[in-house]
Image 1: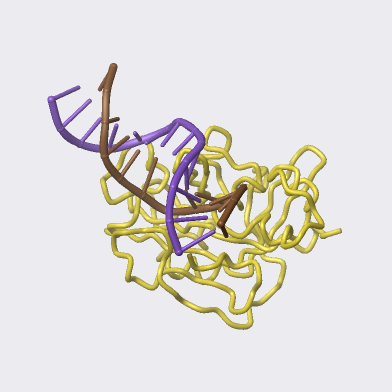
Image 2: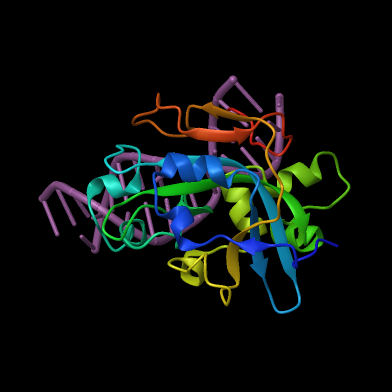
Length: 205
DNA sequence: TACATGATGCCCT
DNA sequence: GGGCATCATGTAG
């Protein structure tokens, strides 16, 4: 069983900087969802940065009700619904008033594997079932039970929050930068960050 | 009020 | 390697 005790919740200043820095620094950190008696935890192995003035960022159109969190204070969860099926989880970056964020694209399950499998409708034990739990932004969000109604705007840095990001002392050996996935604008910018060789990183399409 | 569009994943071949 | 499910959001009218 994964132990909560060694977890140190990341402070707000961690997110109050360039999303590229935050994306890289988040690799190896732990995403945690605390339920009533369940604990879901996953090591972050893949992220993407969305910058201020970035044509591929939701904030590019200006501040709206939908993307408001990206413009707000750092360290909040930005959840959006995409393609009629999937939620995606992000964290806001940069000071209040400046838009920016990091998309969580994949994680390695550490705790609550059965709950994740149930949420994903996956039978554990079948081929590749563990990887399919959390490799991909839509999968990751579903495994952690993320929805816009429930989680958009939540603080990631409040110890009382049921959703937070923590450091458990793990250090990534090697990180790699690649182009982002599934976008058409500014598609050439290398703003995707992955833990080299980790099997839970989502595959290029 | 309608409609095109998209930071995708699944389930086939 | 390609079709498809499926809907919130923004923009036009």
